[in-house]
Image (tube, rainbow, N blue to C red; front, top):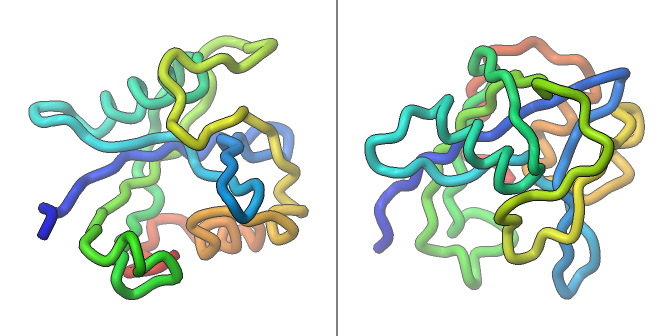
Length: 151
């Protein structure tokens, strides 16, 4: 069994739009919050900064943790290949440090095909992970929320 993995993610909202990475698999396009795995000896805020540079190609100012999510693979739709994954994700409010014309990451994820600003009111029309978090953002739910094991 794999060890539990920590991950740090960015929630970047500007002008009623949410910045997400666009990814593609055999089912089509899906969207993820920018961020990724914490490295040993790395503070979570540094993880968010590094991952945003890798996936978005820009620097971010990291604010407070606003959501915590667990993902226990055996309990979800991807159990066939994620059965031994257990990840704890820390979602930080972030903002882009300087205006960016085009997002070009230095080391995008394998399935990543782009970066997009998505209108918050249309999040429910897309495949976004975790879907529960996109619902909370769309419905302007209270921050500081432990979401539990969700996909």
